[in-house]
Amino acid sequence: MGVLHAPESAYAKEARKWESQHSQYGPPGRPYVYQPYPARMYKPGRIKGIPCIVEAMEVTSEAEERNAVSMGFVAGGQQAAMDHLHAMDREIAELAANRAYTDRRMTAQAQAEAAAIDDATPDHLPVLPEQPKPRRGRPPFSKLSTSS
Image (cartoon, rainbow, N blue to C red; front, side):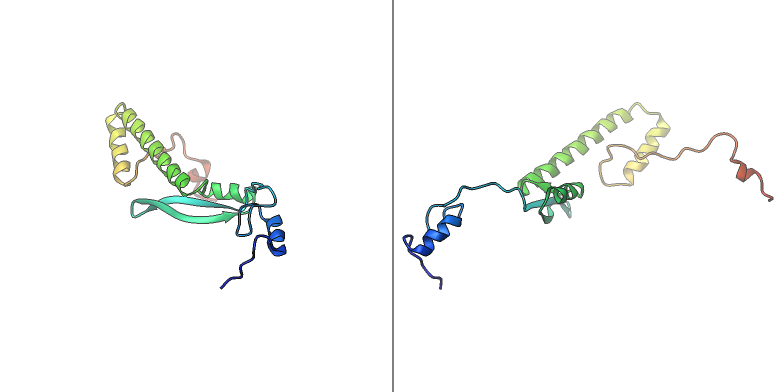
């Protein structure tokens, strides 16, 4: 069981001096000053296709925050992280739809290659991966000479 201190007591008056928010001792004695760190960041993702928060971490400086953002974390709370995930999904879907529209103007052989790549993955592909082109012309000198 905790100890109760009357708001008029010396202890409560001293505790009020250090508080920046209302507490059990009464109104605050110093103004509230915003401190951006430590901050909680969330990484949105999907588990079995269901959007959710995959991971969370606490950052204590601007450098740590930049590092976390580069790893896919989002500042601003869980709802901001989920909004970011949905925005990324919309952007990928729009890019994939634009690619599907432009694929109609490709040759039959190129359409067949694109269809084969699309069938190999369950995700939207906003851009087809670049295929290596066969080298034209004479082979390099090292392949011409077989004797040393």
